[in-house]
Image (cartoon, rainbow, N blue to C red; front, side, top):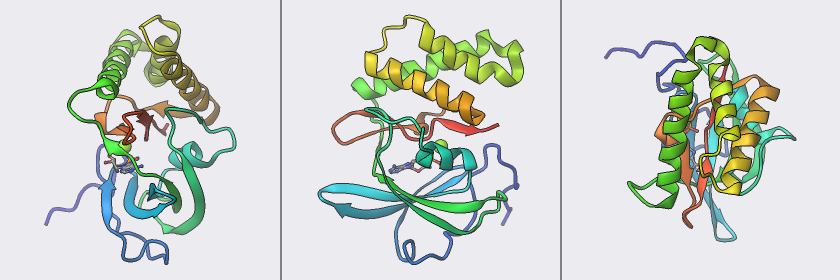
Length: 196
Ligand SMILES: Nc1ncnc2c1ncn2[C@@H]1O[C@H](COP(=O)(O)OP(=O)(O)O)[C@@H](O)[C@H]1O
Ligand SMILES: [Mg+2]
């Protein structure tokens, strides 16, 4: 079998789920470049998942005191500490968050998500000569340019911009699976940033 390259760029993390009493026996429902997602419990009618995070930026996004919160941001229930070390070179952090769902092919949330991704991509092309700062400037462009966002979407984009500047994170708004939704149809920024 060909082993995936150990880079942080476009490769799904290949680590096994770390051994931890909270994680053992749970079903894996998602995996990305830096994160393993396991199905959690239903508490007071709310479905939860465990995100096993290997990126300090993702950990800050979910747990920092000044992390973005509000209508379009994931609800975080608990920070369960660390579980071993990931092949990315950082400890795994276990964070319990609300369960979200992939965006469907159409509908309001999907339409807004498509508009965010395409406008962000276009702005990146516009500002591509700025190299390292391109993503953050492109996000700023989305915040300050009238594009017909609802107030809650515009506030969320601004909150993401502030978080990115504060934590040296880069926006990751092009990949469709970083935007998800609640069962009630609310668009949620589930994984909108990555590490510089
Ligand atoms: N809160 C969640 N509820 C259910 N599935 C999720 C949740 N967050 C992420 N996922 C799934 O797990 C995958 C990887 O999660 P993501 O946060 O995007 O990780 P990465 O930082 O590795 O890209 C996502 O593409 C999605 O399918
Ligand atoms: Mg992702």
